[in-house]
Length: 319
Image (tube, rainbow, N blue to C red):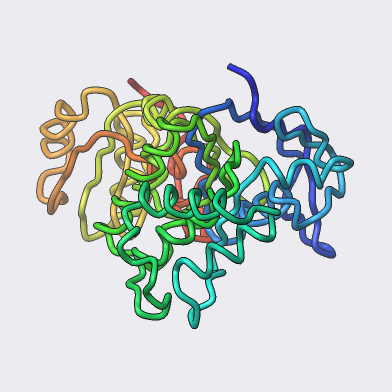
């Protein structure tokens, strides 16, 4: 698969703070790729660099083989960008917003009219072309943002938190349109998100945490690598039970949100084992397949969005 984006040891700093720490990755043409991370993870900085809004400080990057440091103008013709903050003029109609966008790219006349009609039709908002943007719902505005970003026929679509402020139904609509754009035009999609369920829909995920690349793979592979089923135990004294489980079974038990958490293959077999070993100390026990939350805990040592590390009683595992 040819690369749409190649990033090589990219670093970026804001004063004393390292926002990106030697990030290297590649995104194939036609992929839907998610940069997942909590606030401060570095995904927004990487988005700004890839969208040509922030200069490269250290390292390098290429977009369709074009050097991001030296061929910025050529790259801008290849990409469409939808920012987290709305870029639509609320006092103009949907069609007027798109006409202004097209003219910025030198598109006019019948070609522009045709492209506006095609973009709005594909995104299901052709009947709202004459409506003022301020009258649209959040989901409809997001569709118009996508239409605007796709108007000039980019090969790469960069989206910063595309589901911000959208309800689950509207988020689902946005993803259906991204899949359609990828299928119909072969467009590569790279997006940032802090939503675990959204990242789970991508072909591949890069987990960014405190400026570093913590994980990179498909959602299924990342979850499979966690090491087994996720077991959560409710108890009145989590630190003590965590220590006792680690001592008794020689496994890695962690304290998370006042509960004990561990990962083991065949998690259902551990229910009776733990309850019998510690009678009266288990209020409830749940077993589930690993999630991206579990992946983040495993790779970053804390819960997604938390600053405090997870307390682990043992680093050994018994699978």
